[in-house]
Length: 71
Image 1 (cartoon, one colour):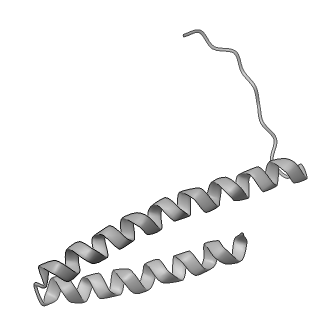
Image 2 (cartoon, rainbow, N blue to C red):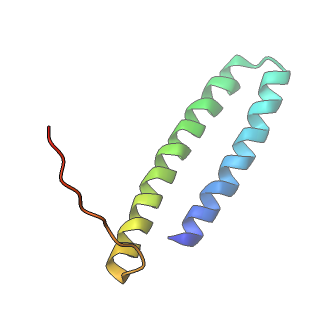
C-alpha cells in the first residue's frame, strides 16, 4: 500500500503539470479532463490512506482512544 500511495502521488504531480500547461494554452477541454482526473486521484488517495490506517491498526502501530460523547 505504501508503494501505491507513492505512485499515486507521482501521478498527481504529472497531472498537475499537464493542467498548468492546459491553463496556459487556455485549452478548456484538457483543463476540465485533468481537473476531473485530479479529483479522482484525491479520492484514491483517501481510500489508500484508509487502507494504510486499517493495516496500522491491525499491526498495533496505531491505537484508538475511545471517548464518550452526548448526541
